[in-house]
Every structure is written in structure tokens, then in C-alpha cells.
Amino acid sequence: MVRWKPGAKERLQAAALELFATRGFEQTTAAEIAESVGLTERTFFRHFSDKREVLFHGQEQFVQAFLDGIDSAPAGSSPLEIVAAAIHSATAFFPDERRPQSRIRQVLIDRNPALQERESHKMSSLAATLVEALHRRGIGEPAASLAAESGATVFGIAFTQWIRDDETRSMPAIVDEVFGELRTLSAPGSSTPNPR
Figure 1 (cartoon, rainbow, N blue to C red):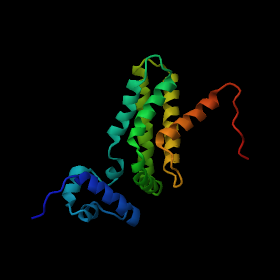
Figure 2: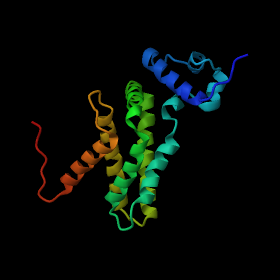
Figure 3: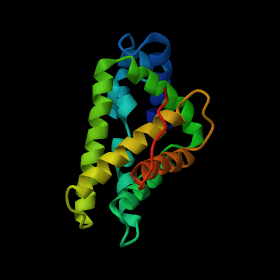
Figure 4: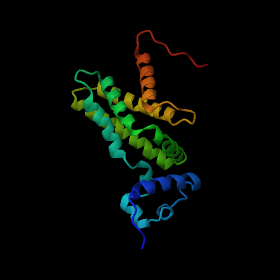
């Protein structure tokens, strides 16, 4: 009789990332993922609706981290300060030990147009959720949309830097730097050097 082991979902996720990276996303089946950790395909589908969900699992917690940051921003904060608080709250979702898996996940997404579309939709949904949360805090338009879209862009740029092969800085440190760049762009008399 096979002894039950805890953490099936986490074991399936780790196995899926490994198999996707070595065999390719399209070439790997849910049954193979489950079998590689001694589970059944039925167990896989108890945890994930399909193999894409392995890469996108945790979306609700990801969005909630942003919303918690918005809720915790002090009264009187500017829209951009509120969004900065949201992103800083979400950086807890990306500790340094998660970086290797995030790198693998991004490579897989970059190689698959359907996964790219799903990731793009995830980020668009995040921005829309931030807009709604800013409205609830009394921020009107266009300030709410500008702040939310800017925040989503800052997060995307920071995340891309965080997963670079040579990067060692923490996600919060990178977010601070990217927000600093954004503030510099809007400062009177600021100019960005032309890279040419």
C-alpha cells in the first residue's frame, strides 16, 4: 500500500516546472507530471484544472497582496504612493529563494504564445483591480488609471530585472529603484539621457 505524503500540490508544481523545462510545455502531459512524483493523473486534476494552472496557481493570493498594500497605505497618500505600497506588499510574494523557479517559469512563458497571452491577461486584470481599489479609496479618474497602470508597469520592469541571471538584489530594492526612475521622469526639468 502506498503511503500518503503531504504537499501533493507543491510536489506537482515542482515536478511540472522541471519537466516543462527539460521536455517542453507542450510535450509534457498532466499524467507524466503526476507519475513523476508517484501520484495519479486524477490527483493532478484534483489540484489543477489543467497543466497551465501549474504556472498560474496562486493568482488570487498574488492580487490580494497588492490589495493589502493599498488598504495599508496611510490616509492622505497620493495615488502613486498608494500603488507603491501595493507593490511593496506584493514583493513579499517574491522572496529570494523563489527566484530560480520564477526564472524557469518566465522562460516557459516566453517560449509559448498561449502562456504569454495568459500572463498578459493576468497583468491587465491586476491593473484593473488596482484601479477599482483606488476608486474605493476616493481616487478619481484619470489619476486612478494612471497610477494603477504605472504601478503595473513598475512591477513588470522590476520583476524582469529580478529574474535576470546576474541579478542578486532583492525584489523590494529593485522596486525602489524603478519607482525612483518613475519619479525622476515626472520631476520638473528632468531629462533622461539618450542611450545612443
